[in-house]
Image (cartoon, rainbow, N blue to C red; front, side, top):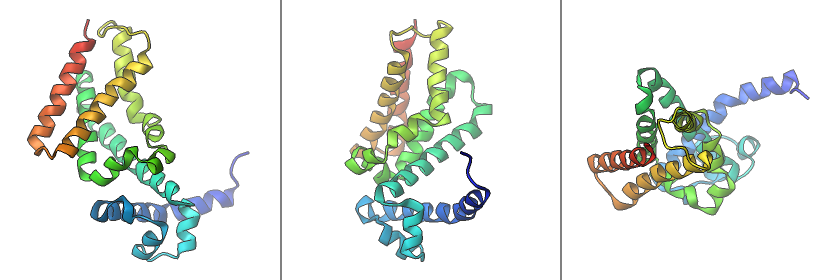
Length: 200
């Protein structure tokens, strides 16, 4: 059943407030870490009644899911903006570097991705269902279909494996304390190794 018009109006009315609170929650995590984030802390920091915060996010996993959704949406928006000026063969590298930049700007959020509460919030589900990830996957699958890349037995598994390399390389940079130049070079090398491994 389609939503009632009054429901749609309510959602539209609340969206700016939800967006504002997500930005505040992101700042809390950036400055004080994931442990400092709670509905109560967000209500206080955002000068918003706790019942309103609860109605928008329900619970902490819901709030964290909203954070990751906003994070993935920013990755997607930046990639889509860069796309017209990005040659197809550079799309993989561009997607990976934008992902790296976002991870480095939200280190605590990125590092929390493997914690139970982030798993409950379905971070990687949010990521894998995004248009940006679909572009990444289609680039690889199209390359296989056109025989530019080696055809694998399970293209979807190959996509996940290659994205795991990107994610792992960025994680290594953040955990190792690389400087920015070293981090970028390491990611470039990982991408080069990946694409060479796929070439026929």
